[in-house]
Length: 544
Image 1 (cartoon, rainbow, N blue to C red):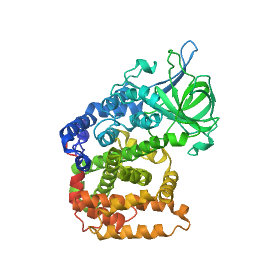
Image 2: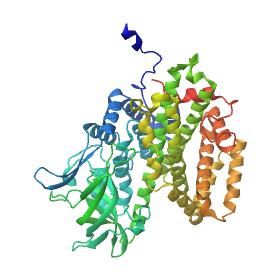
Image 3: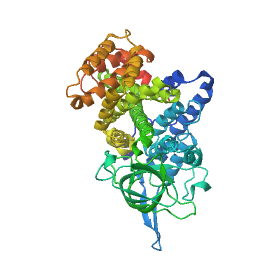
Image 4: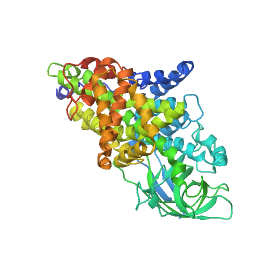
């Protein structure tokens, strides 16, 4: 008799055993739109295979295990020797290995390399975002190394390899290598020019000895690191190998691992350099210029990572509401819940569409596309990453109390959601970078206007938003205090232009009404009720 009180009904089946890529119409459409038709079958097949892996029960379990078992620092071995190693759960290595083998560090010399990698990064983020850090750092290190042809020839084949080799040994003995980064210091943060780590030249040309402290070192288990330090000629970029060519460990003293809000499966460390051997990358005193493309690449990954988190949050919310019944019907059929889901869905689609457009611009490499990236990347990084936390929180609320329970996976998304806004320059840094592009590189805004202008006349709300943006830019009084407002408007107008041109009419209509036309509230679920919201929600539903 007691057992009858424990019957299970009206519970939602887990969102598992599905193709994360193919179940995302916004992502698949963006890939096909920017892809050379001759590559279509190859790339879509590759991404679908990764999507099935990401959506499998096994990989979802790996993600949960890696998150529940964060890395541990081992400074010494049992005999008292200093080893400075980070131990990870086996599931972390499995996730990272899958990411490497899927080409998430191999964009630079593959056809449509950045586009296919961007889509894959967005997909793989939905399995577990923590492994994205070393994948992103390794990917982004390539343009910095290319400032020194000898270093690039030595290291690039290892960084773009699709082989994951986790052992700490000399890089020339490895089939693949990963990179981390150590840029910020406790006294400077984003102001890297305030760095105090010193670099003393050694007898061999291009080699130095580093002394100092890094407050945040990303991916401290990596084979090499790009770091900034003060050389005699000024702030300079250096390559610090984890293991030297003769097999001895470089001086890389891990002080502690950061106890972070989210991104728990990934390690971030404080590290001391004390006579640490390093090779110069680029010219002395040109450290910031050397890493500028690296920074842009990691910022785009912040956009992609946030778009992936948003997509998974929306997929979980729509999936839940499609099955869950309340008050006499499915939640997804209730007008108010439908409004919430549709509002979340257009935010997710706008983020995905913008992120893939920027990745395609990177593949193009033309002058106009490079100019567009100069203004669009910091604007997108500012806005998309800012939208991620409210999307994750609202999606969790769609599950009710179930969304507040760890087993649902939503709390992990909520904790992860603020990271990309902070990483690689927080909101103010991005907004001020947008201002620099506007003031110092007129070609950047020209390229932006040519891009958004392709949709002029298609939607009166978009036309009005473009006009208002031009009016705001005509008055530069107190412009620094308005930098966030400008970055937001630039991103929204660009998203609106892309959706008007490429998204289904119901998606573009809802976005322009709420985001550009002022017909939406401060919270999700405030779209005009007259829109075709059912179609928007159905488009966002992950078909298993």
